[in-house]
Amino acid sequence: MNRAHAILAKWDAHIAAHGKATPGEAKRDATISDLKKRLTAKTQECTLLEKKLKAAQTAIAALYHDNEALRQQLSKDVSTTVTPIRPRGPRQRR
Image (cartoon, rainbow, N blue to C red; front, side, top):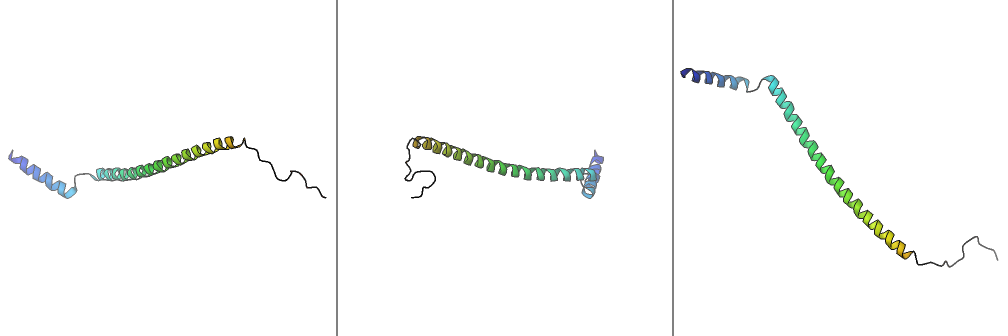
Protein backbone atom coordinates (compact mmCIF):
# COMPACT_ATOMS: atom_id res chain seq x y z
CA MET A 1 0.00 0.00 0.00
CA ASN A 2 2.75 2.45 0.78
CA ARG A 3 4.27 1.81 -2.62
CA ALA A 4 1.06 2.79 -4.43
CA HIS A 5 1.55 6.46 -3.53
CA ALA A 6 5.07 6.43 -4.99
CA ILE A 7 3.89 4.73 -8.20
CA LEU A 8 1.00 7.16 -8.61
CA ALA A 9 3.31 10.14 -8.02
CA LYS A 10 5.73 8.76 -10.63
CA TRP A 11 2.83 8.24 -13.07
CA ASP A 12 1.57 11.78 -12.50
CA ALA A 13 5.05 13.16 -13.18
CA HIS A 14 5.30 11.12 -16.39
CA ILE A 15 1.89 12.36 -17.56
CA ALA A 16 2.83 15.94 -16.75
CA ALA A 17 6.03 15.63 -18.78
CA HIS A 18 4.76 13.64 -21.76
CA GLY A 19 1.02 14.30 -21.85
CA LYS A 20 -1.77 11.76 -21.68
CA ALA A 21 -1.65 10.73 -25.32
CA THR A 22 1.11 9.22 -27.38
CA PRO A 23 2.21 11.14 -30.48
CA GLY A 24 0.11 8.81 -32.64
CA GLU A 25 -2.93 9.32 -30.44
CA ALA A 26 -2.42 13.08 -30.45
CA LYS A 27 -2.24 13.08 -34.27
CA ARG A 28 -5.36 10.92 -34.44
CA ASP A 29 -7.21 13.22 -32.04
CA ALA A 30 -6.17 16.29 -34.06
CA THR A 31 -7.41 14.64 -37.25
CA ILE A 32 -10.71 13.76 -35.60
CA SER A 33 -11.10 17.31 -34.31
CA ASP A 34 -10.39 18.74 -37.78
CA LEU A 35 -12.91 16.36 -39.37
CA LYS A 36 -15.55 17.33 -36.80
CA LYS A 37 -15.03 21.02 -37.58
CA ARG A 38 -15.28 20.38 -41.32
CA LEU A 39 -18.41 18.27 -40.81
CA THR A 40 -19.99 21.06 -38.75
CA ALA A 41 -19.22 23.60 -41.48
CA LYS A 42 -20.67 21.37 -44.22
CA THR A 43 -23.76 20.65 -42.12
CA GLN A 44 -24.36 24.38 -41.70
CA GLU A 45 -23.85 24.90 -45.44
CA CYS A 46 -26.35 22.13 -46.23
CA THR A 47 -28.88 23.61 -43.82
CA LEU A 48 -28.55 27.01 -45.49
CA LEU A 49 -28.95 25.47 -48.96
CA GLU A 50 -32.00 23.49 -47.82
CA LYS A 51 -33.59 26.71 -46.55
CA LYS A 52 -32.89 28.41 -49.88
CA LEU A 53 -34.33 25.42 -51.75
CA LYS A 54 -37.51 25.46 -49.67
CA ALA A 55 -37.89 29.20 -50.29
CA ALA A 56 -37.45 28.66 -54.03
CA GLN A 57 -39.97 25.82 -54.02
CA THR A 58 -42.47 28.02 -52.19
CA ALA A 59 -41.96 30.81 -54.72
CA ILE A 60 -42.36 28.36 -57.61
CA ALA A 61 -45.57 26.99 -56.10
CA ALA A 62 -46.95 30.51 -55.70
CA LEU A 63 -46.05 31.35 -59.30
CA TYR A 64 -47.66 28.14 -60.51
CA HIS A 65 -50.84 28.95 -58.59
CA ASP A 66 -50.92 32.48 -60.00
CA ASN A 67 -50.28 31.16 -63.51
CA GLU A 68 -53.15 28.69 -63.23
CA ALA A 69 -55.47 31.41 -61.96
CA LEU A 70 -54.50 33.65 -64.89
CA ARG A 71 -55.06 30.79 -67.36
CA GLN A 72 -58.55 30.21 -65.94
CA GLN A 73 -59.34 33.90 -66.11
CA LEU A 74 -58.06 34.04 -69.69
CA SER A 75 -60.19 31.07 -70.71
CA LYS A 76 -63.28 32.83 -69.29
CA ASP A 77 -62.45 36.09 -71.05
CA VAL A 78 -61.78 34.45 -74.44
CA SER A 79 -65.51 34.06 -75.07
CA THR A 80 -65.62 37.79 -75.79
CA THR A 81 -64.78 38.52 -79.39
CA VAL A 82 -62.96 41.57 -80.57
CA THR A 83 -63.92 43.13 -83.89
CA PRO A 84 -60.98 44.77 -85.62
CA ILE A 85 -61.44 48.38 -86.70
CA ARG A 86 -59.61 47.89 -89.99
CA PRO A 87 -59.97 44.85 -92.15
CA ARG A 88 -57.02 42.52 -92.18
CA GLY A 89 -55.04 41.72 -95.26
CA PRO A 90 -52.96 43.67 -97.75
CA ARG A 91 -53.77 47.34 -98.19
CA GLN A 92 -55.68 48.26 -101.31
CA ARG A 93 -54.88 51.43 -103.21
CA ARG A 94 -57.69 53.79 -104.14
